[in-house]
Length: 316
Ligand SMILES: [Mn+2]
Image (tube, rainbow, N blue to C red):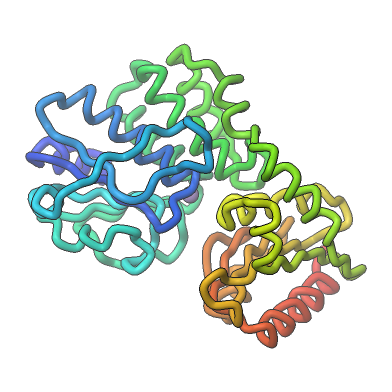
């Protein structure tokens, strides 16, 4: 029912603005550009705006965004993608939009939209949005549009390798492939990294601290990003390389804050045992097996590491 309500809101809107979380990742951008492409092709007379920063760390896969005026946002239906809370939305002007809709796969979303489509079983917001479009009309998408959704789906599932991947994910992926897009081109766009990042990740691997209880983590400081000339966000997204270690139940990457060196942010990952509650205890959140935490002092960081190690000792 909510899918039909969404369609009605889109059809009634004069124009539409798409929002996502700060430092938009592959899923935020994939769902934004995929949905924008779809809306522009189906409703050519309705202006569609894409708000927030660019995805420069994914090479040239995503086009640069065009600045959006506050006036245009006010006159828009705002669709907030991949974002559970008001403060996480990158462009806060979404609050001025005439109507707000949220489509997301994060658990525990705040109640700020007139229509909230939250499905925590979806592997990615890209899967969720593509699934809605499929329900509206199962004709294959244009291949450029399908490629954006597929990139987002690959990004949040680490190339279909994590527990959130379901039969439904594969069915959506198959439908996206029907567009005629090159699956290998998108896979490669997702997996390729610039040489500087490759070298930084090699160094990151060598900094692993291994705890025999089943925990592995790396702490990186500001001099690290500077010496490799890499973007902190790009490094953060490489936390998954630690998950390649069979012995680990939990793994984490802690990064010193560039502007506030007293603080660290952490990316936590779990093989099977949920860690969201633990992340929340430290002021973070996210998914059950993948969480983020900001503003950790070194003292809190060490307390968190010890709690993770204890949890690892008790977990499968
Ligand atoms: Mn996502």
